[in-house]
Amino acid sequence: MTFTLATWNINSVRLREALVVALLRNEAPDVLCLQECKSPLDKIPVEQFRALGYTHMIGRGQKGYNGVAILSKLPIVETAAADYASLGHARHIAGRLENGVTIHNFYVPAGGDKPDRTVNDKFGQKLDYLTEMRNAFHADRPEKSIMVGDLNIAPREDDVWDHKKLLKIVSHTPVEVEHLAQAQDAGNWVDVTRQDIPQGKLYSWWSYRSPDWDAADKGRRLDHIWATPDISGAAHGSRILRHVRGWEQPSDHAPVFATFDL
Image 1: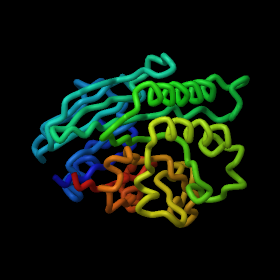
Image 2: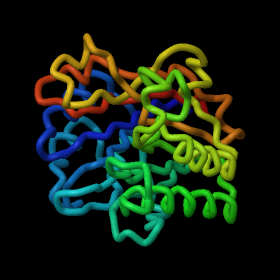
Image 3: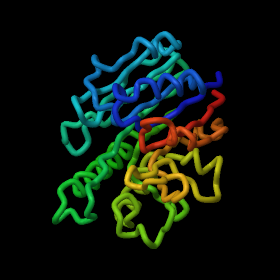
Image 4: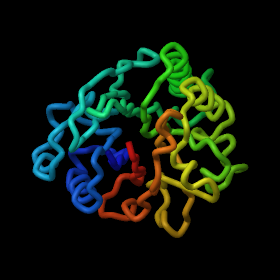
């Protein structure tokens, strides 16, 4: 079985319903994981998605904030929805496909503006969230699993436009990178995107604050696809659809894709 999976922080699925439809129509991934849906689950506009063959959806919704959903052409059964750091946020959903593959969809807290938990509670919440992810993967080592989402951290030097300038900027600070690495190591996760594209600058997010995001190209790779070692070798075809960031009224994130032969 070959299937293609995509992850995309949509920044309001109701506001950008047409963009989701365009992506599904143009690229036709078998599974699309969305973050920051900003909608209760029963208010997500699923009719056009279903008309395109995405007849299965699992998720966790929240009015105006957060929210994660998995749209799928393939049958998928919900298996978990964790509330790490006890934030009461809709930030995780997991489901299992009929081939036994479990898909985790995460929206890790952004962490606010100041990388100091003594003056910024949101940064502390982000670190605590990552710590609890690590602990969960230690306690129940994942197998035959894929983990995707907006993890809100660009871990490598070539995952940001300027490593030195961003060392004190939330999303690329050493303490965040270390926390993410610990969560990755705990689950023995393989970074599929970098497995396929091991060298070079690679971004999935460009700030709305840049009036000409494409020319300035001050991006960060915040969106990730990981897999457990038992299936990571079956992954290929990784790509980031940069041009989608240039669509009308876009999300500030671009979709990330990978294909698995399983």
